[in-house]
Length: 329
Ligand code: LMR
Image 1 (cartoon, rainbow, N blue to C red):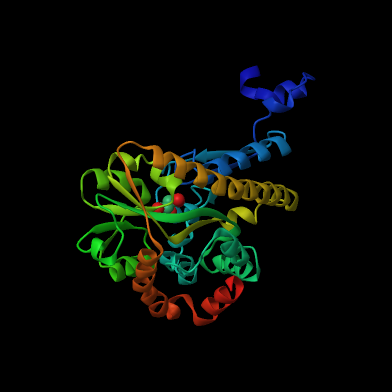
Image 2 (cartoon, rainbow, N blue to C red):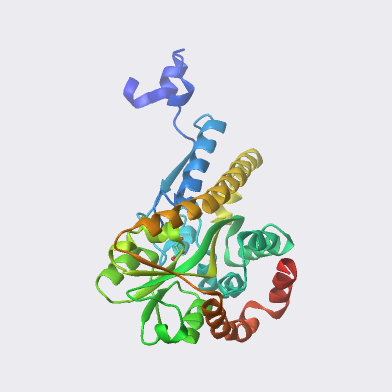
């Protein structure tokens, strides 16, 4: 009987029930596709800790890294079905969800550094983009930086001629597909969780990744060469579903928003720091050849990829692209 009535029964009998033993009243399942040790993985765990502390265990965040629960191909559907409450997909993944303007962040060589990106994501353009997520039944809760991507393959990728004939994995973004074609490669769209195996089996020859993803996926074991191209940005938006979000009390929404804002700031600091550490780490790997580009080499890749910016003005929107360029000028 005591077991059946549980803690509520104990409390009714006048037995003090410690706060930490309280069963969570609210559960948020937070699914993502990268390793727990990446900046995104650490941000999610930081959020989990803050929410546990500030709600005294009343709200629990369960974090599922590494595509354990859902991968790129089904996570947005899972959010719509109510099987998860929070996701942090890369911005490249919103285009296929009917929001092509998010692919502006994929345009190669558009941003020079993270400070430029933040002027966009943390300003009026970013606010409007987060609001746009409502058109696809999502609540946009904030942006976070991954970092700049580098190219890997089993050969150096210094010049457009080096890309010829290579099958390179990309996320499901039309801009990224066009970028690889412009460089002369054959793009292959694959979920993140399948990339390492596809590289190991030589289904694809190479990929583009920030260093944190390259290292935590162990891609140094399946690629011989890493070229420091820094050709494009990878970032994230944290999203929930309006059905879930609107069901929360105003106080819980405020608690979650505040904890998330702090976690995203923490994640951004970590992204920059881990990227620096990862560079030192890849340079130390005995079997990985790391290539730095000379300025003329980088300029030649940039010229080749530049056509993508013109071709995609319409898809991402002339007005939006002009605003982004204005914010970073
Ligand atoms: C990718 O698919 O390459 C990235 O979006 C993975 C990630 O979430 O960092």
